[in-house]
Length: 338
Image (cartoon, rainbow, N blue to C red; front, side, top):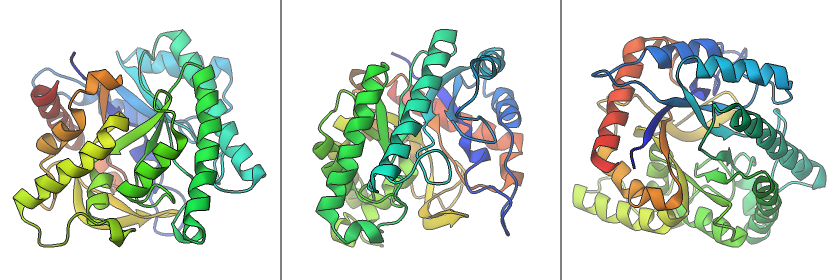
């Protein structure tokens, strides 16, 4: 089964804003245009993955507005794949390990995402993909006050969210990223997935850039698999060790590159730094590393892969060659592993 190639819309939003030092968001229409204009050897992107929040989309959008958006995407011969639920404080949701008010908001965000997913499914613009979540508890300090207890709180919220998703015919994928409490290391992520224990409905979203930081144990040194100065053979041995643990849970996959730095912008601070696909400082052989995650991908219901590269300067995002280079990397992954 071939893999569909998607581009993410959220690089136009994440880390953008009107605070000091921030650049303005890039509109959904412009992100779609840049994606549609990318072409390598006659191949184009097949679709997009999509963050359900302003200014791209009002999560409370009317049926009419959602139909307009679906038509706009479909008119570009694109499909919608995975959707990002607005689970964070400041959007619709709040912390998955917070009080009942906070977790109620978290679940409201999942309900909104399921509603929009259903509308896109009914329209025909969406035929595959998951709904992405995380713990929405930024940073690990509060979690560390009662690590086991707080993981159980997150798992309880995730179980309730998974039931909502299942009732709507959807699956949830929790993105492994070092900034999210209880998900900030490969070991804590695995513990959380096992505590939820609903693999048919709630799985893992692997991102090449973020999971590189899992290897290095940035927010959990006790679970570091590598130290600075590692050799190539050691890297791939430990990479295989990590992917073997998390791959059985992986139901959504992001192609990305990482230069080993920890970076952030605005409220989205201290996370793995994405960098351009051809960045000379990139730590990853994108195609080779992707293969570890994509082994037996079809058995886990994966039908597409998505590029994720956040917090790039707008000048980079607005340059068409950026997206041609990304598409070329995606094609290479598909060629070797689909």
